[in-house]
Image (cartoon, rainbow, N blue to C red):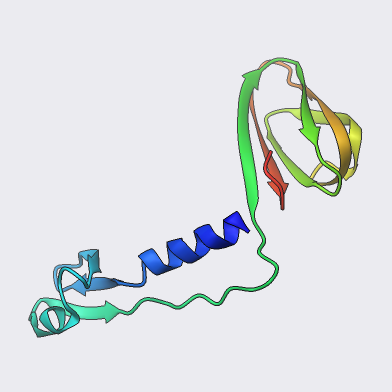
Length: 138
């Protein structure tokens, strides 16, 4: 519910803004409460004004959160998970194995409540991991 309220406030806060393309190539977001549209349209250097786009809210709002982790060599750590949580892990420069509360492939894990244990193996290079959670925060 809090997320829905924040999205509504976010959408309403930008409803008074338009994107403006000027003849010198500059693009700017203009608050029409401070500079009315009639003033913008009358300016000779304004080529295009893009009106705000109304968003339609759906019942099911999808969101995700992610964490980036950087390291070198071998490393092990755990992530607390919730029942029904979906995770995707992208590894750069390392191989990753997992055990614990999640099953599936490393890029599409379905989790139960508990801990996901990750083991990162890298011979000599630095590695980066991005752990993305869909529908729940990490």
